Image 1 (cartoon, one colour):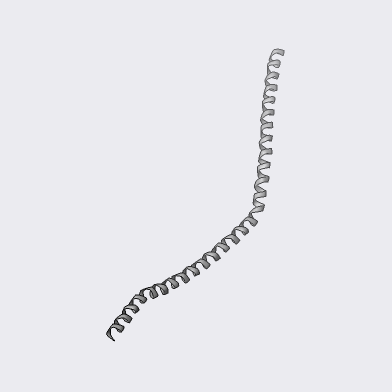
Image 2 (spheres, rainbow, N blue to C red):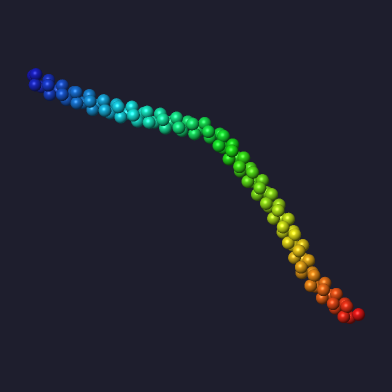
Length: 103
């Protein structure tokens, strides 16, 4: 019986040591998760400010895009006027020459 108890006690001690290692590993995992959770919480705390900054940047880009569209419209009108002048000039010269020759 004494021999059985020695075998059993060694088995119990080994099992307790194994469980202690498992508990230690779980504690380390929990500690790591706490650190990661703190980092995530900090990121979440910064999120409203980041979103606000992003909205401001988007608004600025939209304003610039609108201004660029207006400038493009102005350039299109100018190019149309200059195209008309460029096309009308040779016609006027030809009409003037023809009129002068017929006089």
